[in-house]
View 1: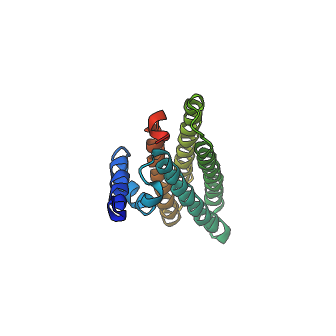
View 2: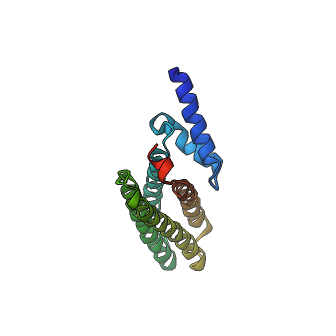
View 3: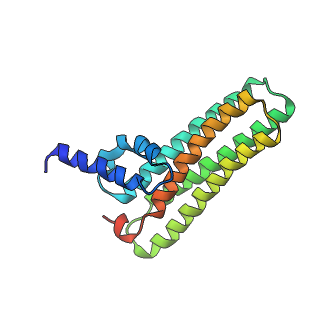
Length: 178
C-alpha cells in the first residue's frame, strides 16, 4: 500500500468516524489534520478529539478572562463573566482528566468499562459547565456584544466536546486495541 493510499484511508477513517457525531463537519474539520497520527485507531481518534476540545476550551477561557480583565463591565456582568471563567476552568479540568484517563488505558479489558464510564461522566460534566456559563450570561442580562463573543466561543467548545463524547462513546474493547 502506498503512503498516499494510507493517508486516504486515514482521512476516510476520520470522515466515517465523524459521521457518528452531532457535528460531523466540525469533527472532520477539527480532526483531519491529525489523520496521519490517528491512522485507523479509534483510541487515537478519541485522544485527538479530546486534545482538540481541550485546546479550544483553553482558548475560550483566555478570551473570557480577557473580557473580564478589561474592566468595562457592569457589576452584574462582571459577576456573570467571572462565573463563566470558573465554569470554563472546571470544563478544562474535566476534559484534561478525560484525556489523561483515556491515554492511561493499556489494553486491560477489565479497566476499559470503568475508564470509559469516568471519561463519559467527565465529558458530560464539561458540557454542563459550558451550558451553565451561557445560561448565566442570559440570567444576568449581560450586554449583547459581550454575551455574543462569549457564547460563540463557548458554543464551539461545547460542539467539540460533544463530538469527543460521541467518539469516546463509540470506543469498545475491540476498537480500542486495534
